[in-house]
Image: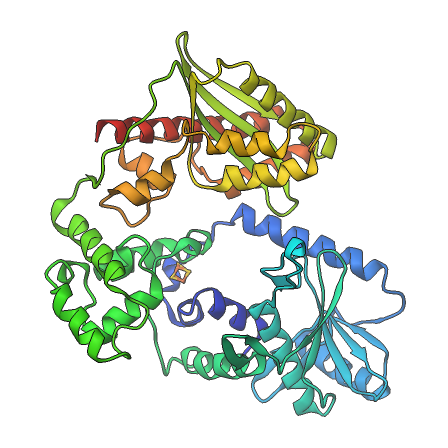
Length: 496
Ligand code: SF4
């Protein structure tokens, strides 16, 4: 099987996936479609179609078998066709399907890929920071250029990205990855190839590692089971693959139950003498890992490290927003209110995908906040997402509320990010400290059979297309449950 851009992408997302896809227990792979992944795919296709529609003349090689398309692509390049769409190129066990092949003045070809995301990561226009090339985009363009060079249709090491804003960016693939990373993007590609091919050929194997991206992966249940059965260190919250591998290699520890007994002092004294020992794991970090391992293995209940004081107020608001990051659109602000007259759920929802609707829902949310007795209410939310999103919205809809008022709202000691409290003051016998993991541990059940923010985004897109009130109801029930789950967590923290 030839190495393709998908292998490079998968390996950058999770170094285990390439091996598991080819040699893992296929009966354990989920074939359930992931609505959010499908939505992203649909949006990518739509974006590509929009770009292609404005390209002018090109040779379309999207149809036929791979062999036929490869033969046609070679012929088209030999004949000097200016623009080739969806050509297939192959050489030395590598295969690429660049969206476009663009003929250069010297007769060579430049690979071009159309992306719905931005060409750079970490860009900040306010600070004049352009950001870095995206590693997966760069690796993909390296693959195409490598094949073109082997076929004699490139002498350069360049590629082009047309991004979600239709901006065209030339990727110079021999540039270093950053001021602190001398390895070039081409060097990264060569390294990835050298690591991936033995995995594809089953000459090398690596292990699953539980991380945030696993939930969107068809191997989630299978890898989770592997990690549980093997008592893998990535069952410890926030440990991750890199630290797991370091602990495996340098301490020869690969089971959670071996960690509580380690001698941290002795390990740190060895680390002081040998700078190559335990890279990236300082004393504070190791102490936290060992403490969490001890809670999983021995304590088995939540632990409070510092007292928590919650404000004594008449109204408590448990607050959660739903937004579609693919379109930077906030479609719901949900509040579960607990007050003197009891409990109720309030939603400030958009019924169309338009700036007017988004602004209107946000305005209604702030009117509601203004209607509450000043300094006699507290707001609970989970993670920095609400705060970051509201700061962005304020820039877009500055007539609704001033930047100072948004700051004031979140800086108020009565506006409490429970996730920060959980992180700083508690530990749990769980591999995830996300809202769902903690609330479910506390016995809370979501009414929906598939509760997730990613699914809610897909439902909202369906609702916009169909205007089916049942879909809207599903979105609201899901959001209400998220708000109620936040309340359950707050109450449990109070009891701790
Ligand atoms: S579930 Fe996680 S570890 Fe397993 S293949 Fe998917 S991303 Fe990798």
